[in-house]
Length: 392
Image 1: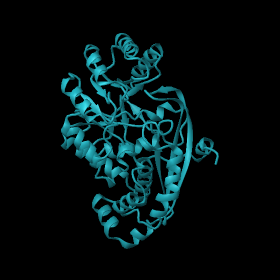
Image 2: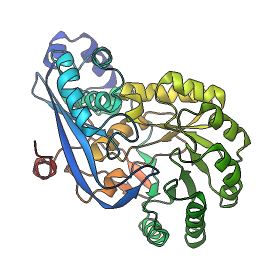
Image 3: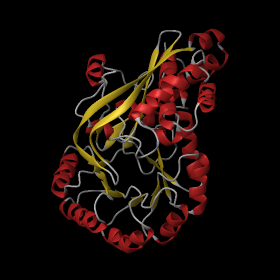
Image 4: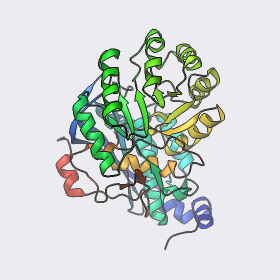
């Protein structure tokens, strides 16, 4: 029987038997590899397969929760790799959490903070799996534990990142025709600015139905590049520019943002709440990209949204190309936010040739549906998982 919100609070905080039955008994971390439907290019890497870490948390009551830690082809986007995540989970975080009640998520987060510095992907995957197990124990959704859903779906864009303009034109047309995506993000920075802008011009000319156009420079431009090419981006009716300068160049971002007629989005520049506040107060951008990999946990991600808004930034649901498990974790938070004006980009599962869950996420009418049911609302397909596991 599912609990009401009031019953959830009473059970989680006061029922000592329930607290005992939700003690963490086992944590496992497994590396999963899934081939991609096409090459995906960023300013500093390219990959045709996705690797991530599946984390499984088992409670004393026998219920298991799942979480996912994603990286981009190794420690290139941040300091973590699938190998380091697996090692940190196994060697440091798991021993610190055995016996800790999942019914006390603040204690889970505090123990992880004491056991390891940063390592946000590893922590986020464990906290996701812990929330999933706790919610399944209560027969409610993770979204319920986080305060309850305000929406059942989120607008979702698609990223064009092969670098082949002809291929990207056909890809965008196909997404529009099936009513999956009408907003698009174009990855820049892996070619010269002139080549990137020619590609962008072709997309604008040949796919005029694109509603919203975001460009992600992935920290690849200089401040001089921005001054030189921003007028062209304006002519191409770009709606948002993501992190054009290196993440540590707060001053440069602030100067560019002050001159730009197009809003800038802060991504790699701000992981911690202190960094979010600094970026907002300095005027580095007017939009903030929310990511579990930056916040290190579902509760911290929800808090990051409030910090960003209080610092003057609108919210965007960012991703690190997570699969269905990681996307479902983000959606559990996004569903609770009063405002998410830029939608999300959790198209990651559609980049995989296959899935490791029985119930893939649903995209329809340009929206990503928030999974329903207990926990995250997604369930492992053990047969497919077996085929996708990296050999030990």
